[in-house]
Amino acid sequence: MLRKADNKFFAAIAEGTQTKTALDTAVAVGAKVSSANLPVGAVVVTNLGLIRLDSTALGLLGPTDQFIIVQGKGATMPLLKSEVLTKGSIGITKHKHEAAVQQITAIGYAGSGTGALPSADDTSYFIKVRKNDNDAANRSQPSSLFGQFKTGSATTQESLALGLSTNLVKNFSIQPANNYIGVGILMDEAGVVATGTTTVFGAVNGSTEIAINGTLTNVVVGDYIRFAVGTTVEIYKVAAYTASVSIVLETPYVGATNAALAIAVSRVVVNATAIAAEFGITLTGKVADFDVAAFRDYYANRFTASFSDESTTITPLQGARNGTGVWQKVAMDEYMTYGFEGQNGMIGVPPMARDQDVVKGAKYSAIEIVWTETIGTLVTSHGAKGSVLVYCGLDTASQLPATTAAGDVANVLGSIALPTFISTSLNE
Image 1: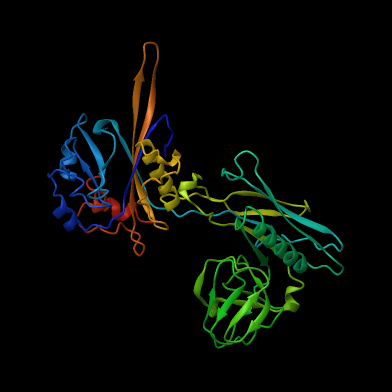
Image 2: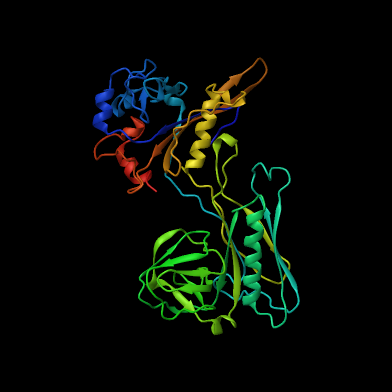
């Protein structure tokens, strides 16, 4: 998606809060659009006289006919209007919402295979994590984060895994990269089903305390527990247990927050078995805090991990992906649009924040309209690209645009796309 100063860029955000009936009542097809009648969050297509078009009218436009995209901002605010688009000169690409994916890297045992951590006595081991993000702290001099542990006598993979992971968590918490990476432990033992009177666990990402509402009959301090089936799932050593209250883990929970983790899919590995098991450490990127006013571009966390023992296997389990239609990216595109529209209050003293309609945590699908302008001079000719994006807010339950109805043009997108496309291609 273009947003360079030497290319035209525009983004409109359709939150999908208007029903088709309400939108048609507010500003009918064929009526003139204004700040007073176009609802906040509605995005429509109009001709150059701001007359609202529907899919039929848009389809009748010829190759040289022109139209614009218009977003409602409220009765006291001017309409947000795209540049003039020529129907025969544009290309349209549709993008359904795709969630961001964080990087996961394993050191030693990776959930399968023959990988393992070393276990030499009286040896200092360390994990080095080099940040690769293009944020303010790492644009020119990427920082490196370390976790270190020195083994004693009678060393096991278990002791090294616990020592390194504990030190990594501590170091990450006190450095500027706080909360950058989650640290987990893998073990090759499958374990047995957790049993007891409780039916669910309550877990919070980053916490060492797991809430329970009953008792467990086959878990004691020193055992290991994982909260899903499979050796690819992180496992945790039980540091303390209080019936009907909580399990305290030695390392923080790295899974997604869930108030109802089923005991039926949890697995327990007794300490005697764990001592002889193969262990590995997982490093999982976390969603970084994002504030568009700080002018920090959005990226999924990326890093390069290395281990002091070069014979130990390092396995990339999952690559990072920024996603499509994630709220952080939409917020940045909206912010840049207002800059190109002339909202330069951010450079004032005191600075004035730009308008923002994006909803934090929301999901969006997108339609991108692109074209190339031919720019000629006396001696040269070259092209410059332009881009108009329409972000379509999705209903959190169905992952479809909230106002889409069978047989209707998608309300939030006015006349840009037919509902058959919306229902099959813009959902997650």
